[in-house]
Every structure is written in C-alpha cells, then in structure tokens.
Length: 161
Image 1 (cartoon, rainbow, N blue to C red):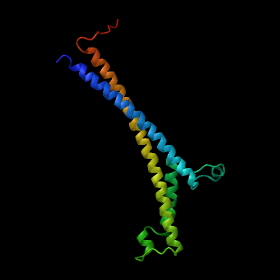
Image 2: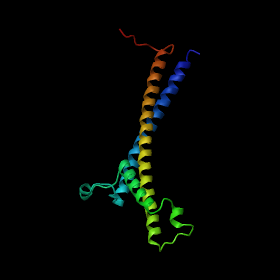
Image 3: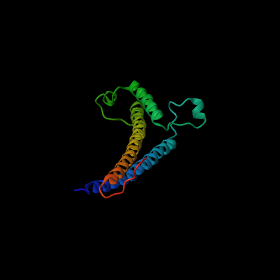
Image 4: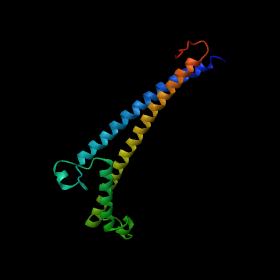
C-alpha cells in the first residue's frame, strides 16, 4: 500500500507526457489550419470592407474580423434584394436566367464562404487555447508526479534549509 504513491506518480508522468505531446500537436495544427484558411482567402482576393488605399496596397480579407465584416456587408446587400430565398422566388422555382435570382444565389454563396472562413478562424483559436491548456495540464501532472514520487516511502528526500 505504501508504494501506491509511486504508481500514481508514474501514471501522472505518463499523463504529463501525453498531455504535453497532444498540446503541441493541437497548437501546431491550429497554426497550420489558420495559415491554410488565410492562404485560401488570399487566392479569392476579396477586398470587400477593406479601405480602398489598403486594397490598392494588396490588403485582402484574410482574418476573422474582416471575413465577418465582409459577410455582414454581403448579407445586408442580399437582404435588400429580398429578406429570404423564399421571398425572392415568390413560390416559383429558381430561374438561372433571372439576373436578380442569380445575383441573390451568388451573394448567398459568397456570404456563406466568408462566414465559414470566419468560423474556421474561430475554431483554430479554440484549438490553440485547448493546446495551451493541455500543455499547462501536462506541466501540472508532471509537477504533481514529482512531488508524489518524492513523498513515496523509500525515496530519498531533499531537505531544504
């Protein structure tokens, strides 16, 4: 029974290593996916909501805030045509030759693209926070394991003076 604290300490060491490794993986994946979303946004070259002087310098919609703002602008413009898709169609089927219906459909697609991008940035931030939390937890597990292992019967103790 006296050696239980040693076994618990070993379990804590294993949990610390697993938590540290997973935390590092989460952080790496968060950064990689955030850069991927930013790169995909750059290929689209959307400048809606970016001041003209910044757009002229090459600034594009490529962050959570910019994507959300651009999506909101498009949503407002789309809703000025019709509040809902059903209202736009008025009980009829979609007519791809109708310019208003085609513009509305394109607006929905771009709006969804921008909102999905902003959600992706938000998700990468959550994953980053989870990774940092896992690293902190791993350090706490490791420190607790060291203390427990040091308190186990039969282990040499360092006496602080």
